[in-house]
Image: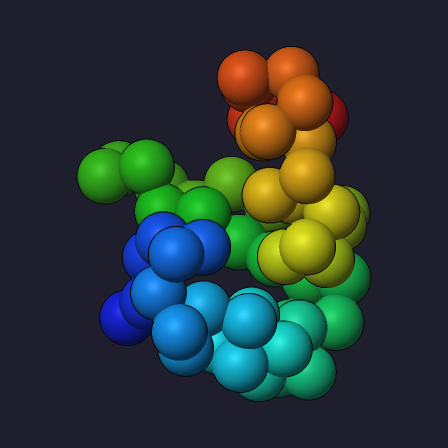
Length: 56
């Protein structure tokens, strides 16, 4: 996402677009491989905020 901070005015618009495109097929590139997350982008961000971790 270009607007990588919630304080950015376009953050929520970008998040909605990402959710529309990915549904629950969110992938993360870790530099060597992709890692799937069975979550929407909003669920992913909420879990990071609550747990401080991206472990699913």
